Length: 356
Image (cartoon, rainbow, N blue to C red; front, side, top):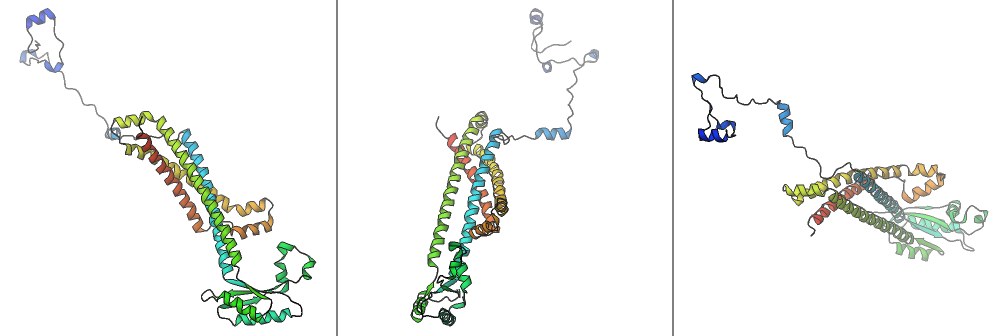
C-alpha cells in the first residue's frame, strides 16, 4: 500500500488524495509487495564529447554589423577621401623632390655673362674670363658655351628664327663650384667686374627664391587639402557613429544591462571603424599608386607627345614615386585608419555620457 507521510486516512477519504511530488512518497519494500517497485532513476542522455564542447563555445556577434549597406557606403566614401589625400601627398612630395634637385643643381653652379661690346673682341674676353676663373680657389670647372648653345637657350621665348643670328647674344660661361670649399660669390663678382668690362656673375639667387616660393605654395596648398580631407573624414565618421549607435540602441542597452562598461562598447565600435579605415585606406592608396604609375602613359595617350612628357618630368621629376614616396602613402593610410578609430571612440563616449 502506498501512503503519504503526514496525511490522515480520514482526510484522504473525504478530500481525495493530495497531489505531491513523486519523491515524497515511500514504497513498501517488503517481500510481500514485490509487484510494486520504485520507479527507475532517470537515464542519463548521452551527448557526444564533440557536441558538448561545441555547446560550450559562446558566439560573439559584433555590435556593429560589418557588411551592412551603410558600412559599404561608408567604406566607399572613406576610400575616396584616402585617394584624394594620397594624390595630394604624392604630388606635393614629387614637386618637393624635383624642386630640391633644381635647387641643388642651381646652387652648385654660377654663370658668368660676357656682353658683346663695340670695338671689343668677345672671344678674347671669354678666354680671359676662363683663365681668371680657373685660377680661383673654390672653382671646380669652368666651360664656355658656344654661340649656338647660347642662342638655343633663347628659343623657348623667341622661337626658332634667323633674327637670332643678328642679335647681340651674350656669351655664357658655366662655372661649377666646389661644394666642399665654395668661393665667396660677392668677392668673385667684384673682382671679375674690375678686371673685365661688361662681365657679370649670376649666382641664380633670384631663381632660387622663385623656386622656393613656388614649392612652399604647393606645400601649403597640399596641406590645406589634407586638412580639409581630414575634417571631412572626421565629420563622416561622427555621423556614421551616431547612426550606428541609434540603429543598435537595443543592443547597447542590453550590453549595459548585463554589465558591459562604456569602455567595452567604445572598443567594439573602434575595432569596427579601424578595420573599415584600413580597408578603405588600402583601396584609396592602391588607386593613387595606379595613377602615379600610369601618369606618363596617360599623357602620351591623350596626345601630349614627348614634349609634354618632358615638361611634366621637368616639373615633377620622373612622374612616379620612389620608396620614400610609397612609404608616405602608407603613412596616409595609417593616419586615415587612426582618425577613423579615434573619432568613433570619442564619439561613442560622448554619446553614452550625454545627458538625456
